[in-house]
Length: 400
Image (cartoon, rainbow, N blue to C red; front, top):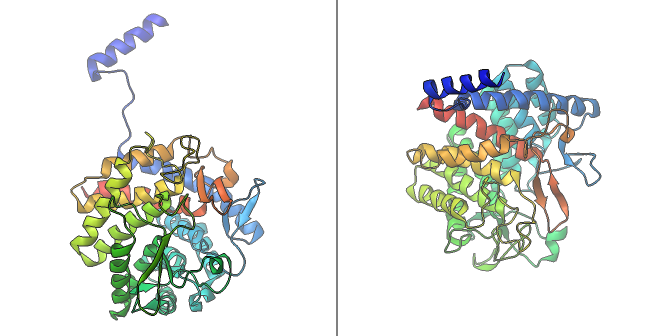
């Protein structure tokens, strides 16, 4: 047997130069991960249907934590993921799941007290509209966009993130806080201008992007989490954090929101300053001296506990999705980095074994360490952006 194995390897060396398996093509790699996602999340869907609840994460005791009743900024991600899987598999069960779970919060389209409407409705109804062209979804998106732009202050030039008269935000002394996460809500506004022909939504999105570009970034192109403004004058009052290690640190998911947000803004405007900003933030992320070899960042680049600090797969998934798209605008500059992140996320270190992890795909994400909330757990938005990144990655290579 040993002689046979040796002969086989000699034959491999002669024919192929090495006795190693042929690497998967990008399409094959993605298809394998999507097949796994379909299997794993089908189990999660069974759990969700049985409970009639929208899954979010795992709590500290290792039990399922469902999306909060009332309002939850993550409520659009599982329906959005269901739309992705319906588009890939054409299974009616995924379409029914998307419709069921997004309908549970449709009336939130009228809420003007929250900035997360873009996260919620663009990821769910937005994907649903792209796939089905259901005109009712288009109306939901318009109403949600109308609600979101009520939070825009033209003096500041931004959409207010959090109300400051209640909750933990009221204890910070803020008057008009704007968080980098808010860049992710702008896509719904750009789409609203396209679908309605009314430029007002796009104008708000551009103003917000410009104000954020001016005030949220440091000289090295890392970004602050929160910039607080004077709503009467538009002046910057402070630059702080709510979810990072410190006011001066680089919170990993914040950097991911930034590179994704400006890549997306370039898609809709073709404004070179957005493309330049996206590249500079991407370069900060990828060239950071403490970035681990597998490219999955620690939850904050400046946590003094590194290398004993938690990783954040959600930040990596968002970044990968952004880098694939950014590669399409930069002659493939970042595509290998995106591929390396996706390969790391697809590895057993970050992708759960089928049937484990409460049936979420990715392990090792972080919600908010300062709030002692969702630390080293799966998150529904990590799975959402991971699948989005995979789909973009396959599409990028298909179009080459």
